[in-house]
Amino acid sequence: MTGREVNLEPLTLSAVLPFSLSSVLRSHGWIQLAPCDTDETHSFLGRVERLGSGRVVEMLAREVDGSVLVEAAGALSESERVELGCKVGWMLGLDQDLTSFYALARQEPKLAQMEGKAQGRILRSPTLFEDTVKTILTTNTAWSGTIRMVGNLVSGFGSPLPRDPSRHAFPTPGQLARTDEETLRAHAGLGYRAPYVLQLAQEVAELTLDLESLKAADIPTAELRKRLLAIKGVGDYAAANLLMILGRYDYIPVDSWALKMVSHEWYDGEPVGRGEVEQAFERWGEWQGLAFWCWDWSHKSPG
Image 1 (tube, rainbow, N blue to C red):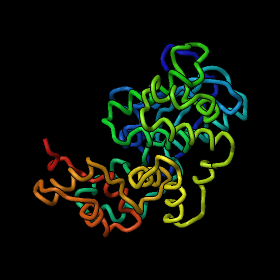
Image 2 (image 1 turned 180 degrees about the horizontal axis):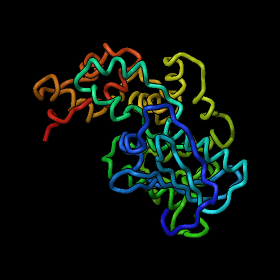
Image 3 (image 1 turned 90 degrees about the vertical axis):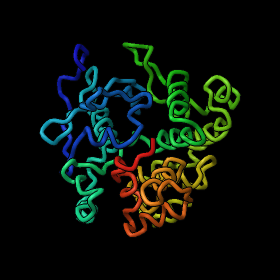
């Protein structure tokens, strides 16, 4: 945030160790999606964020001695500071304890480096609504299409940053609920996903769907998966992706990339299906999704 106005009293957030901000940011393509920002070395997380008060601020989080320092442009009220701290804590998974997983990972050469590099946390959005929208926008498209669609949503519907109106926060459910399917389909480029995003926004805005409560839902993973699958536009892959964001790793997000990686890792490039992907990681039990996500595919990656 060099050259930018910052809060004179930044927040310092503690993390369950080991922790590495760069490892979290590298864990997920989400860092490439608006309104997030970083540098080539992933040394900071920048973001334009709309707070519950309606105020839009620019924030920056960086690692200092194993903790996370959060700065915001302009002074914040105490309630805004608490809110921003909670959002950053959730995004970076600061309270996640992966001790049990690391104990298993040490026994697997393809995962043995994880603890030393403090890997395993998966970057999240501040809200499950944002994560769900972004996940829906990853389906049946190239990654460049996801980047484009998310960028269109943010620039077209999100609240602008007062000091730089060219930058916007991710739109709230209410902001998206006030638009229409044709606008989302044609002008935001969402295509067939437009009705799914619109319905999701309307249900969350009207409080008929409480996505945020799922973050702390004390229910079996299978039940949580059922609730996610009940959302229009969320299929098996999307549900598994959202479960991992929620810290549930019982399922693998099987897509074309997963099929390709498993094919080249264990089947000499021969075609495989969902069953082969799941079988490859079933021994990891409740951690299988995370084992898949963090697996070292490097020496088998197809050209």
